[in-house]
Image (tube, rainbow over the protein chains, first blue to last red):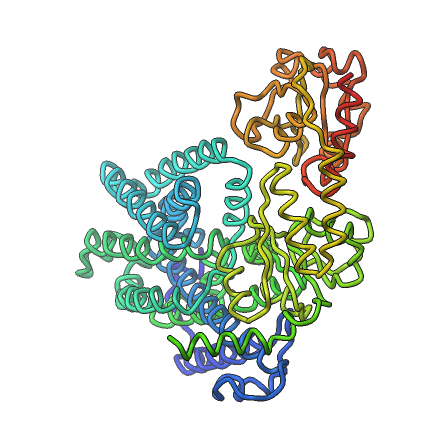
Length: 340
Length: 269
């Protein structure tokens, strides 16, 4: 809690430097990730494979090109986007709730999206065309419910309590549907819930990324209000921030970000929780730096996790949610213990 | 349009995979792997999926993930010239991606019945250019799998993935194989696999209990299963009519179907 209650005292030069370093690291990691996988592509071949048309050299290069352009590049880009969005929403929720343990899951956003997705798998066969809108609708309904129910209780605590109830209801409905599912659907559900970036295709990216980038920018604009919130909700109000309106906006924007994302990736845990936390420890709680740095670090974390998921069990691949939780969980415990 | 036609015909002629018998095969589905072995073509297998657990030699091949969520890159990294996939293999986007890379993908029906099994065998045999062997396997299969008239023997098929038993209802391959063996599934009214309490097992009073060997392992072995309160009170346990069969033999609907039926029929007598 110390980090969140003290505004940043670090030098702006240092944070600028860190932002650049994170950006550079992300690009480097994306290139590495694009070149490694079950089909190993030499790093030096990347530019040629990307920029030449399907050239008339050996079949090996043609395989590389198709793996790189059709599968790996969209997946790496999607991983970066998803990681950035997860970390951003995590940071925003932590500011809103004035609690370093907050994340979008708290409001029922994630469980609502999961409920929508599970219903889609059960009723519609689970193709992404059905799954994404269903998950999106689920997250919006759950969030709207949490928000409206939360209004009956003072301050932010109402939202939190309503979120807990909505989560419980969503999870029990998911359980009910899991019970009704047949064998095949059950397996789809299981794999979906463990998360994967394998759904990252160009067509998905072309639909999702403009929307996600615009909504992320809208959240970033509220950094001043988030800084004011460090002092307390009432204090922020006194400083002239219309907290009720800002809260409504942030909750809605987060739902708009997480709903479609969770639909496409399934459950990816811990990135939204751990990454902003870690950045806050290094950079302090000034949201002007914290938010963009979290996005970069989130992108790095997810691209790296996907790389691990694709490499450790090859030629098979692990679901990425397993990797993030397996690494993120112990890391988080370490964070808790090491900060007295 | 015409140009496209000519181009595709040319491509077909130029594609070496169609001219010569494929030499590097990846299978996505345990029953398909078994069929490749039955056709004596295992030397051409370069990788299989995780459900390919029989014959034991198949476990030594690289595994490209579970066929329902296989890794496209993993498959491609084996540089196959033919992919045999169950129609349950997926996700669909992954299959589409494989096809886009130009590797021939043959999708085979997975339904748990004799007709689909014949199609699986015939399809793989022709893809491997082993039609004669395929035909002889099918002829033998038809001779050995004779529909048995339904008996009064009440059977319960249990699956356990986590240590608690689930009973197999209708529209499962478990139900299909019980029917083929002339057994009467006590859970015929239930849909799919559902958790089953010990109390309900006692209430169902099955004459025969069928378990896959992996489920038996998950439940802690024969002794523990026989001692389970509720299960111990069934006629099946009292008469020691408990059949344990290899998962793929029991539920895979592969070329060993006659053997599976034989084992089931023996106990129902």
